[in-house]
Amino acid sequence: MTNSIYENLDQLGSSGKAPKNPEEAVLEYVSNPRPNSHYLVRFTCPEFTSLCPVTRQPDFAHLMLDYVPDKLLVESKSLKLFLQSFRNHAAFHEDCTVGIAERLVDEMKPKWLRFAGYWYPRGGIPIDVFFQTGEAPRDVWVPNQDVPTYRGRG
Image (cartoon, rainbow, N blue to C red; front, side):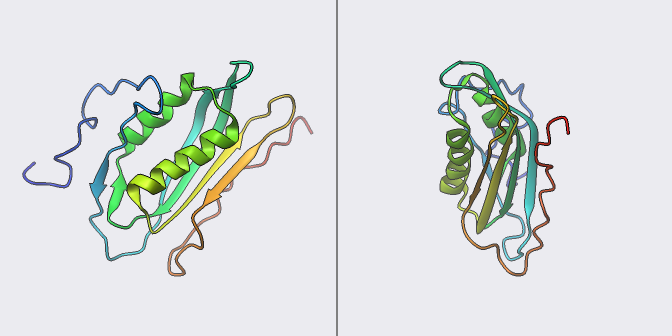
């Protein structure tokens, strides 16, 4: 590849070992090849794990990221490794969900971002956490997330 938007990526194409914690994780970005177009990017992570900060037991979530890029796109492998870095990270659901969203907003500076954490039940109670930067641009199709709420055995 000659002088492309991908030339500064270190994780794409490498063995890609997950960082030990979210603070060590590096999110990589590429220039948006369509900066004059409004469009939505969606990432879904149905097998996210972290640890309860009190019991140290694993917590599981279905995460969904929707964003309208401005100048940057998050590179998918770096996002995957960043999310994997939470496997040994102890934090409440709210802290994980909002912290991930805030880091993406701070670093990527999208035109709009919506991030949802649909957490599986702990003690019989599911916790869903939602973060959004504001109203979505009017000319962007924002599909429903269609993640079913937890129904238990009924």
